Figure 1 (cartoon, rainbow, N blue to C red):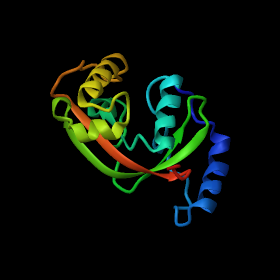
Figure 2: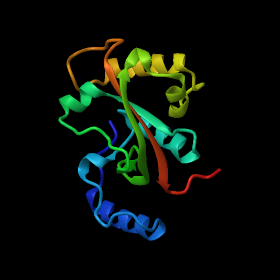
Figure 3: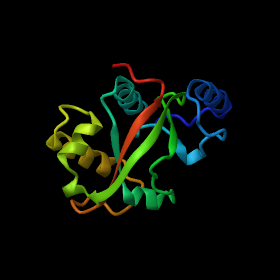
Figure 4: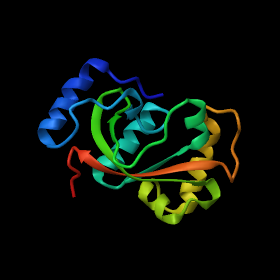
Length: 162
């Protein structure tokens, strides 16, 4: 599991980001908007690497996990601070799109946006079926019709290298 955020470093990180990216809100995003990708430190680092390379522009989660964890769904326009596997703040993302669809109806375009493996829908389904079975915080199990929150984002900080 990725480490919890190092709270003392978040405020200085956000101030640095605000100096680099004018127009960001003064307030640091709330706790539910500070997170790491995946369920392990290794996943967090690998997926963050794909984001920072500009390959990964989407992510997905089980709606049932949001409900079990009593978290609100992502909203278009929200800012999130992304942590690496050690809990260090490394990036700021802004949500650009949110769709909730059954697992079996997630499309090829979303699988490609997630940037993992060969970027195909078949790869996405295999990896995410495994992830949703192994790391669920709900007790409903996996189903092809389970609702999946498909989120698109853009990197606000640091600037993506092209």
